Structure formats: structure tokens, C-alpha cells
Image 1 (tube, each protein chain N blue to C red):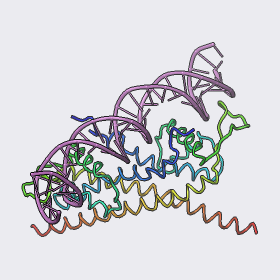
Image 2 (image 1 turned 90 degrees about the horizontal axis):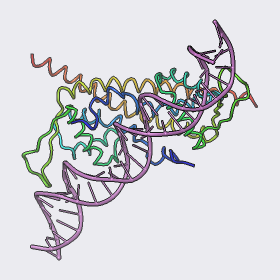
Image 3 (image 1 turned 90 degrees about the vertical axis):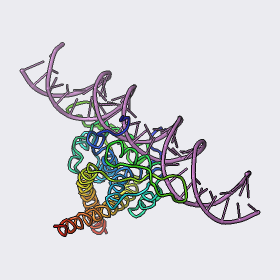
Image 4 (image 1 turned 180 degrees about the vertical axis):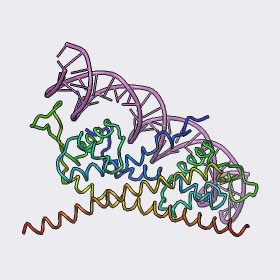
Amino acid sequence: MHGRGQGRWRRQGCSRRTARIMEPALLLLLQHGPAHGYTLLEQLGGFGLDEVNPSVVYRALRDMEERGWVTSCWDDEESQGPPRRVYRISPLGDEVLAWWTQDLVETKRMIDCLLTAYECRMRQDNIDSHKER
Amino acid sequence: MHGRGQGRWRRQGCSRRTARIMEPALLLLLQHGPAHGYTLLEQLGGFGLDEVNPSVVYRALRDMEERGWVTSCWDDEESQGPPRRVYRISPLGDEVLAWWTQDLVETKRMIDCLLTAYECRMRQDNIDSHKER
DNA sequence: CACACTATTGTCAATTTGTCAATAGTCGTT
DNA sequence: AACGACTATTGACAAATTGACAATAGTGTG
């Protein structure tokens, strides 16, 4: 039994959706201006990405830096807590965001395609069950 | 360097999107009527899911069967090739599809949220660069 | 100094994915 | 009847990805 799946779609739920959305969301937030990881973490909620594990966000930021989408340096100004890293979007990051936006448009198109087909099916089923009586 | 990412968004591209779309797409296709894996594989292209590896589709079908979303049995009628498995959607599968549809609506909302913010930013940038002159 | 809060990093098992090969039946050709 | 082309499905594995939790570290409060 199990070994794969078994309630996966309930427990994990939106993991893959998150992955697909979080990085463009971070880039978009950074396009608004430089920011700390912690701030970004909080702002993600605005895109419906609440309850993301901090590790996941920080890891994403570091990965994006490795890929050259963002740059970072330690913040000079001190504030309550340890030194904070400031992230900035790079020109490459701008490009990636533009590309990614297109990708999201494409994804949206696919979803619309599915939803339309589903609603169409439901309507048909209603008509059919009406005829049966 | 690398170890993670490094061109990931180019090479793999839409893997996570695929995962998020393929299973509901399969369920939807099966709601239309029983079908063979091979047929479904071809029909997925209609939802923009061309170039999905056959293994991936067959594996998804088997997983869905394990979870009870679909049932399968060998086809009686012979056709050019080895015996084929016929998949049928189960009542549970109907429910899952309904739930998943809601999930897709939610995903779409998040994407819209992002795209709106992005377009808004682009418009603003245009205005700004216009003022500069 | 103990504690709560802000911030960031490191690690690891478990899951998921893509890929490639293996199996297997049918049909047409040589 | 051996061969290759096409239809179908399955198996197995390395690599990538994820979530969860612990570790580190500075600052302010009582």
C-alpha cells in the first residue's frame, strides 16, 4: 500500500503551486525596491502565499542569487536583531521576471482551458439529469 | 557554484506546472468516458500538455488508481498491440476533480494577482521614463 | 542572565521527477 | 520465419525538490 501519494493532495496541498508562484512573486516584490528576506517573507502573504516556511523563502533567495537574478549585501543600518541581508533585483532578474510573466500567462491559459471544459461538462450533466425525469 | 538550479527554469521548465495540471486533466478526460492510457496520453495535448513522457502519464494513472480516484481493467477487445488497460473514473475521482477544480480557481486567482501587479508596475515605469525626458 | 523576538543558515529524510530501458503483442515486408 | 515499425504498458534509478526542524546570532526587556 501507499509508498506514493496517499493523501498527498491534502497534506502538502499547494507545494508545487507555491514553487511556481513564489519566485516570480519575490522578483516582483524586489522590483518595487530592495528588501530583507524577513520583510519579503511577510509580504508574500499578499499574494496568497501565507504559511510558507521561512527556510523555503531564504533558500529561494539564495538560489536566485546563485543564478544571478538578485544580488545581496549586508545592511549597514542596524535594527532589532542580527545583521540583515538586503536583496536587490538584477537586470537579469528583470528579464527573468518578464519571461516568467509570460509563463504565468501560459499557465493561466491552460487552467482556463481545463475549467471551461469542466464547467461545460457540469452544465451538460445538469441537462442530462433533467431529461431523465 | 551551482548544485541547485543553474538553468533549471530552462531545462525542466514546466514540470511542476505539469504535475499540477495533468492529474485533473486526466480525471476530466475520464469523466468523458473510459479510456486507455495511450489514448489519454494523446488527448493531453489538447490541454497544452504535449511532450509529456508516457511513463509519467502511466505512472500518474497507476497512482490515481492506488488512491481510488480511478479503476482499471484489461480491455477485452483486441487491437493492434498488446492488451490495453481501460481506466474509468470512480465516484471518489469525481469528488477529487470537483475539489481540484476549486484549487485551480484559487491558483488562477493568485496568478491574476501577480500579473496585475506586474502590469501595473510596467505601466508605472513607462510613465516614469516619460517624465524623465 | 533568562527570555522573547527578529533574522538567517544548515541539514536531512522523504517525496517527486525525468529518463531510459525492458517487455510484449500485431502487422507488413523480405 | 526473421526483421523492423508501431502500439501499449511497466520497471528501475539517479537527480532534483520539498518540508521540517534544529542551529546560530544579535537586540531589547525585566
